[in-house]
Amino acid sequence: MTEPTLTVIVCTYNRADLLTKCLDSIAAQTLDSDLFELIVVDNNSTDKTPQVADEYEPKFRHFRYVFENNQGLSHARNRGIEEAHSEYLVYLDDDALAPPEFLTNLVNVIESFRPDFVGGPVYPYYIDHKPAWFRDSYETKKYENESRFSQTCRVTGANYTVKGDVFQRVGTFNVEMGMIGNQMGLGEDAALLDKYRLITPPSAQKVYYSLDCWVTHYVPKEKMKLRYYLKRKYLAGRTQVRIAGLDNASYLDILLTAPKGLLSASLQLASQLKRNGPIRADYILVIGTLARMLGTTVEASSHAWGRRRNRRAHL
Image (cartoon, rainbow, N blue to C red; front, side):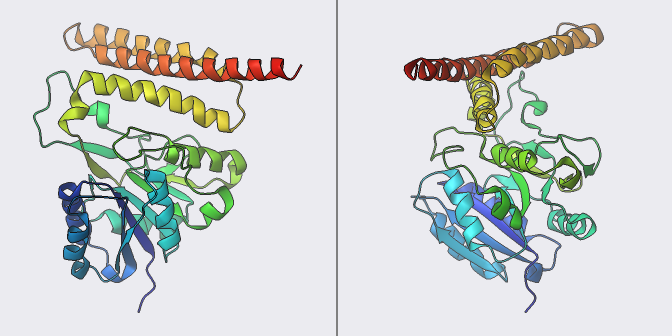
């Protein structure tokens, strides 16, 4: 039997209905089913997730359902690393949908470039009515305009492929970051990529961004509320500082960079006002940037003050 080239890992928690849609999209892949295995990591679900896994097992050549009782997305992602039997690990969110050619395109990238990471765009899809103020761009994650190796692009967790030996060099996902049950959390995917870039010389970095390896990602109605949007931006700011702090960055330097984000958003808003007029301008962009800047400032100030107190305590 052919050894799988890819391990597709879907971590899930109490979203059986969305999981079925995700697994349907994986079952419909054009890639030969011998070339990939599928692992569903159940992170303490209390709904019908085990029954869904049982239903879908016959649809795949290589399928495993595993239960991870340590609550948290990072624990579930790390369990996927332990269970994988192939060279490349492909993380898809349980509310993501992969187009039929997704895995075929991914194998083509791997065979052509042998990257350490592969990322691609994530586009939103909706079931509920979208508010008039909410734009697709708020949930679109596209970090390059062409397919290429990049030393700066992000790789979002909903569409995140890693060569297995990277974990041996860099370590696994930080269990203090990421979602924990229904509690919002961010950053475990970004922290891993940042650590890889920190310890890998630029000339040896192999992060490939492929526009052909895209997925869609469900946007529920609670994410289309201004309060949620701002809370997520605020948390993103705090998480950014936590990730930078792992690299012993100067928190003062981080504080000084925060206003640059506001300036950038203000310039974008000014450009939109000039081009489209006040009605079509994206004011949410500036509000979101303010929320992120506030999160950055709060977290960086907290760490800077904590370090100052520790130094005084040791005098």
